[in-house]
Image (tube, rainbow, N blue to C red; front, side, top):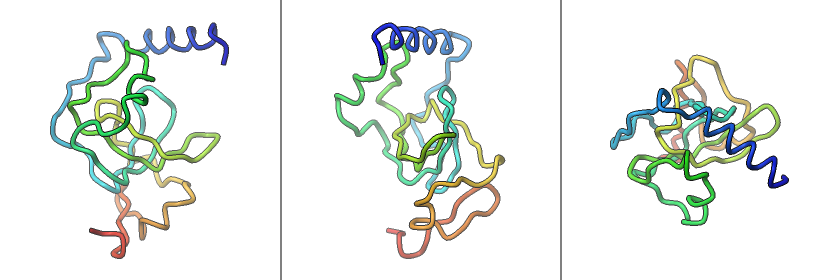
Length: 132
């Protein structure tokens, strides 16, 4: 991506996250493993596969987020099996950037069956063999 395209993308993101979009930061997890969520800024959704009580990724990863939209470290972060219209992947997302999305049906991520036995009422259920 060219520097100009990257600057336009960051400018666009900054415009999409204005004072009216400010989200209250909750210190306690609002979501659980198996919940289906979507990102409030980027066009992807996923299922939660793990929860960190606070940021627990690399400093390099954290600094790669544009400063004007960088979330607080002092909130839960979620590991997701994520998908968008083009691909499947894993994502690491702050709580403030997630919205419940269980009402929009199941995901198509190819790895779901490794962890989950099925879905009911907008939530995936962990397989017994993957429970701690």
